[in-house]
Image 1 (cartoon, rainbow, N blue to C red):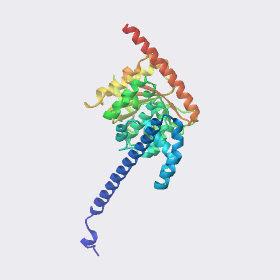
Image 2 (cartoon, rainbow, N blue to C red; image 1 turned 180 degrees about the vertical axis):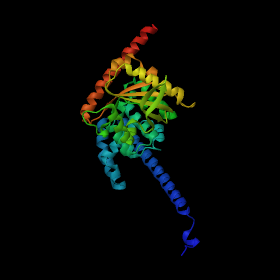
Image 3 (cartoon, helix red, strand yellow; image 1 turned 135 degrees about the horizontal axis):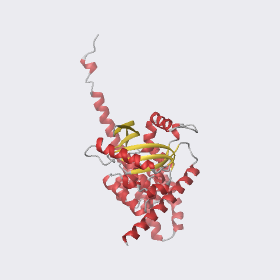
Amino acid sequence: MSKSPVQDGNPHLFEDIKRLIDEARKQVAQTVNAGLTATYWNIGKRINDDVLKNKRAEYGEQILPTLSAKLVKEYGSSFAVKNLRRMMQFNEMFPDFRIVATLWRQLSWSHFKILIPLKTDLERDFYAQMCRVEKWSVRMLRKKIDSMLFDRTAISKKPEELAKQELKTLEENDKFSPDLVFKDHYVLDFLGLKDTYSELDLEAAIIKEIENFILELDAGFTFVARQKRMIIDNADFYLDLLFFHRKLKRLVAIELKLGKFKASYKGQMELYLRWLEKNETEKEEEQPIGLILCAEGNHEQVELLQLDKANIKVAEYITKCLPKELLIKKLHQFTKSAKRLIENRDVEMEGSEG
């Protein structure tokens, strides 16, 4: 027995109405979030202004319990003393309301609560802008901070003014620079590799865990090919992994190496990049960029070879989950070395100009 037209109805009716309801809920949630965030920022500013006016830090400690008791009685536990302190910190850490207004379209109050305790303005701005552009959830933001993403990106090694400039470009134009994308260390503990493994084992493990590998690289990466074949002078050459980065608008060639970085890797990568530029790059795309992943870097060799000029990045990979203290120590050692080399390069440039 066939169903009547009334029973069937319009097959698209339910989906259309469901979409309308979901979109309306999303808009309401965004409006509520924006209102809450603005209110908390303004409360923090009002208290900070009052404390500043009285010119006594202890004044703030005296008024908060009394103010909180009255607000909690009227509006509930959201205005407990610790929450009022957080609102004051929110205003202090994000003093420009215009920046807050651009961020709350993507960031909830829960995002801001995670950003407030970060140590430096640069680190806070980095995570806030990356979170806005990449649309990270609260859970993803926490994961990125726990994995020390900022400390592992090239931008954290730059002079502060240059780093701020790149973040400003990201904020105003949503335009990524390679130094915002590439890291000096990649944590590949999810690959489950044993103590001894070959480059092919590493490559196979990455392909098997490609989703996690792309997340560790950056959300903008798209997998293109494994063992990309190139015929040069009638000889076959094979690139380990080929990706495309949507926001950088360029191909990314990745070579996997065991042991320390060797100077000879530069020539090999340059060959691959020039072939990709000639045979695979579309007109609207930028020049391909190379990433050489090594178990250990030779930082002075990398600096002397001026790999940045050749569009080549070198990074170390970590295949075992290190205790956070050890990871911090490793990153600090690398940062110290990188900054020393940058300072030496600047001195040499000043000398050549003179």
